Amino acid sequence: MHNYELISSLTDAKNICIIGHLNADTDALCSMYCLREFLISRLQNVNIVLATDTDSLQSNYLAILENTPINALIDDIDTAISIDCPNIGRLGKFSNIFTQAKTKIVIDHHQTNNYFGDINIVENNSSSCEIIYNIMKFYNYEISNEILGRLYAGIITDTMNFTVGELTDTTFEIASLASKRVDTQSIYDNFLNHHSATNMKLLAEAINNIKSFNDGKIIISYIRPKLVKKLKASFDEYTGIINRLSSIQNNFMTCLIEPKDNIFYVSLRGKRSYNVGEIAKKYGGGGHAGAAAFDSNLSLKKIKKLILNEFTKILKSTNKNYKFKF
Image (tube, rainbow, N blue to C red; front, side, top):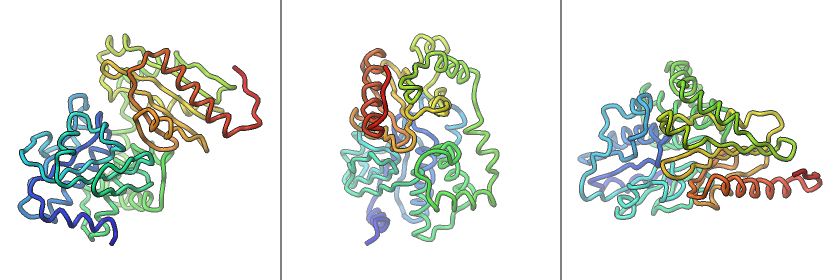
């Protein structure tokens, strides 16, 4: 039986909650919205709600879920679906809904997923939106332009416009369909070419704080909590900064340490065979070989030392004959 057929087990569900991860990104939000629309079309007399932290989301992100019940939680959730989340901890305050549900389903594309559901649909591809597309295609679901636009948005943001992540033939199949049926340029402008003045100031801070090691192969930078507080910057304002740093010439691995409430969010990027996903998984986070992240309550100084140590281990194991300079 194909794993997608397990969705048929939802026919007995009464109350379904689709849950996104903390600080939900475009892929998570679009996946949640599209999956709900798909399930509504196939299930009768079922309540389907979405749950995710929306406090820090900017207007262009909130617009993804327009006219959709968000956090309007109902009692007696019998089925919980985790979207785009590698482990239960990343569900935050909504993790209890997942653990208490009779049926637990995980849909995710992260290589570091720890398969915490009763049903796990985990695929190594560009995005969770691509998985939702595969499910819809399996069931011969007629995808509207509204749904297609959101699937495309999730893909281009998670792959930084097809430059990172696990790209597949299906990734470009969706892009091809979108190019014919939706305004792809406006989607790009809305999510990837949409930088606020605050984002630019944070980027300047990150550039100013760059420290490079091993002839520039390792780059570690940070953003001061004091500046974030001064700018009243939301978590979304960090979008794209780590990718700008990782584009520096001769760089193999990049780390950007970002303030997040009273802790730090440690964002990692790796090129070629430099797998940073395993670092994130080791410290309770997740992601892919080339892009991953984790939360840390360590001090900024200790995080920088930890990451330099982890990056150096990878560099040594990958370049056995390389002469290191410290």
